[in-house]
Amino acid sequence: MIKRNLIFILVSCWAFHATAQTGREKEVMDKMENLNNAIFVNKDSVALAGMLDEKLSYAHSDGHIENKAEMIKNAVHNLTTYRNVGMEKTSVVFFNNTAIARQQLNALQTDNTGKESPLHLGILQVWIQEGKQWKLVARESVKLAVN
Image 1: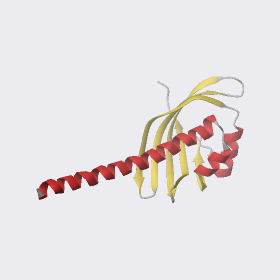
Image 2 (image 1 turned 90 degrees about the vertical axis):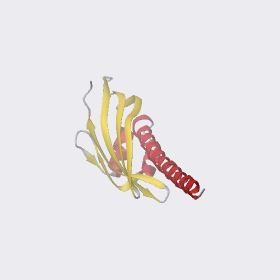
Image 3 (image 1 turned 180 degrees about the vertical axis):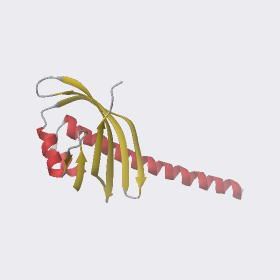
Image 4 (image 1 turned 90 degrees about the horizontal axis):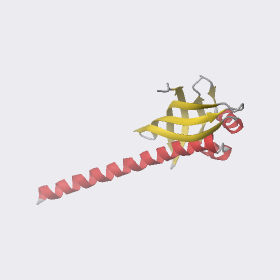
């Protein structure tokens, strides 16, 4: 009987731990999706300001690096429009209050001349948890080859 109770307690603890991790992972993945929407769909400066850390380092696939103010300004005033924005191959790894997140972002972009082209990016993000809020502190992207 003691052995059965011990197994039950261990399984319960493991299930609670797995659920807690899944909850944190979902929080960060939701933040990733909200960030993509604020940048690519809504171009929402207020939402961006709330998600970005003051010390943000935001690197584009062309090597251009922006701080928080530059990133918000350039995202909001970007003349390129995006459709069908989606995330694939997402993963999140935690180190205490830090999350390292990866995603493949796919979209259809139209530049200010009307030229349409696919966008495929590999993105690495570093999120830090401040209280109950997750803030993006670093982001790096690379262009992915289209198959």
